[in-house]
Every structure is written in C-alpha cells, then in structure tokens.
Image (cartoon, rainbow over all chains, first blue to last red; front, side, top):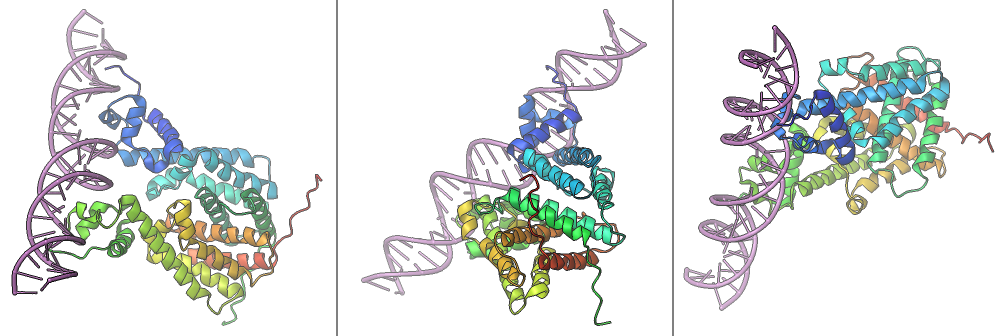
Length: 195
Length: 195
DNA sequence: CGATTTGCCTAAAGTCATTAGGCAGATGCA
DNA sequence: TGCATCTGCCTAATGACTTTAGGCAAATCG
C-alpha cells in the first residue's frame, strides 16, 4: 500500500550496508525486504534476483574503491603513491568488510569489463610509472601488487595473522617498504642456463 | 533400509569432491545426500549440521595442503624451496578449487589452533631459514609470502588476470624470482626521521 | 477527473536446514 | 541359533529463503 520508494539504487545501497553489518554472504533478498519493511516479492520489480542484487553491490564496492584510489593517488608518486594505494584497499576492507567481500565476487566477463575493476588495474599501472619498469615487467608488477594487497587484506581480515606478535601494522609497513625496494630494484629475468 | 555405510569421513571426502565439482559454496547437505542416494536427514547422524560439514572439508583441505607442502619442501632450500612451496598452493588450487576455497573458511580460534593451519606457518618459517632473516623480520616475511601466495592464487582463479598478456605462468615465475631476490636483500627498517 | 501505469501485495511452489520419532537390519550374547 | 539391543536410515514436520503469477490501490497524466 504505502509506497516506500524502492529503486535498484536504494536497494543496492542498503544491501551494501547490510553486507557490512552481517557479512556479504548473509545478504539476502528477504533480509533486505525486512530492512525496508516490505514484502519480499516487492523487491523483484527492482532487481532481477538475488544474484543480480549481489552483483550490483559488488559493482558499487568496486566503484567506491576505485574512487578512493584515484583520490589517494592524486598528486603522489613513488613510495608515497604505493603506500597510499595500498592503504586505500586495507582501510576500505576494514571500514566496509562486507563491501570488500562483495568486490571479490566473480563477475561474468562482460560485466567485469564494464566495471570499475579496469580502473584498478589502470591505477596500479599509473603508480608503477614512478618506477622504472617496462613491459612485460610492468604487468608482472601489477599482478604482484594486486596479489599482495588482496592477499594481505584478506588474510588479515580472516584472522590469519591473529594472536601473534608483531602487530599487523608493523608488518604492513615493512611489506610496503619491501615492495618499494623491490620495485626500485626489479630483478632482470634470470638467464635460462639450460639454453 | 539398505545401509550405505555413511561415516563422517566418507561424507567429508565426498563433500570435498563435490566442492571441487560445483564450488565450495554449493556444498550442501542436500546435495551430499543425493550423491549417496540417501535421505537428507540421514546425514545428521554423522555430521552435526551444514557448518560442521563445511568445517570438516576445510580441515581436510588444510591437511592435504600441509602434507603436500611438507613433501615439496623435503630436501630443498633457498629458492628451490620457495618455488616448491609456492607451487604446492597454486597447483592444489587448480586441481582442487573447491577444497582450496574450503581451506579459506574462517575457523573459530580453537579449531584453527588444532588444524593443520599451524603447520603451514611453521613450514613457511622453515623455508625462511634458507634466508638470513631474524625476528621480527621473519614474521613479516612469513606474512608477505602468505599474502602473495594466497593473493595470487585467488586472483588468478577468480579470473582477475584473464584476457591479458603475458600469460600467468610467466608472471608467476617472475614473482618467485622477485620474492627470492627480496628475501636475500631484505631491507632494514627505515630510520624514523621524525625521531 | 477518469484512465493508465506503476508499485507493493497475496498466494503458491520449490529448495534447503534441521529436529523428532519410528522401523528394520546388523550386532552381540547366551 | 535365537533373542535382545542397538544403530542407521527413514518418514514427517517446521521454518527460512527464492522466485513467479496475478491483483489492487496509489500515483500520474491527459
């Protein structure tokens, strides 16, 4: 009866908040309907189905992350840029664990290609312009940075580093140092001695 | 009627196979019952609930991974050991994507402490004995390696590196080179200039 | 101000998780 | 071997979530 004003955007936004509160895998059409005090079926006029809802949340998260990254990189280069970008991911994951998890959702190729995901790769590449890498090493480095950022954040959030000294902030700082050092002294491909 | 011979072990094993076939998040008590051609309720005499089943699969995966890692590390050191350990994770994830996903399941602290998860950290530490690192740098390095291995494998499997040259094998090889270089020249903590 | 569109609702069917209680086949003991 | 017990799988039932079909009323538009 009373029209609540549901839209795909509001549902996505609320879904993202829900994800941060209860975990991305607990984001359900039912829970979202409850949050709007509306019957479940009503949501199906605005999102195709549960999968569609989750995809929208993932795209929202990717966009937010990319926006933050762009902001953080502005006017920085070298190690400063490296640390800024790295911290964007780590901080976002801490502030918005559900959204961060959503950003890892596997998207179908077309959706992925149209998503903010491509901006992430572009920004990492931009960051690497502060170091002296040419293709294909630049791509290798992009992948390394992606791996470290994502791997560290997900292990840290998953409790993989818990209950042990030294604290994770110290490790994070040292890892950024190490990456900076590595990028400034990127090793040449080893000679194939079997040639 | 006909007794099928269900046991927690057989269910766990079959659950792991199911995970590899359809994905860990599609592992369901119902699907498992179907696979044994048995009614759903019958499984509840052998596993407490769905969560219990998933935890058992996770523990199985962690154990298999640790066994493979121990095997791969035997008799190796330095870069050879580094590559061997790294490849264990990558190959396992490719052969058993569902189990690999299961191994990432967040366990409660006691379960985690009793799991093969601790062996993984120990082995990484053992590997680092081939490099010249002392605490707390060794712990930092353990975390870095864990991050890179997990991050790379999960991005690669998630399609994050798709549709782009150079191929992921080349990147993987160069990342291992880079990590070896980095560990042999681990940078000292930067002096705090604000002191 | 009536007609149409739109938004939320009721109803219903299917899947999955979980618990309670029953029956029959396996096991153990004389 | 025969009987009693126990164990393993079953039926039945409840409740949550997903999804579709079709209805009614509120908003909107001419």
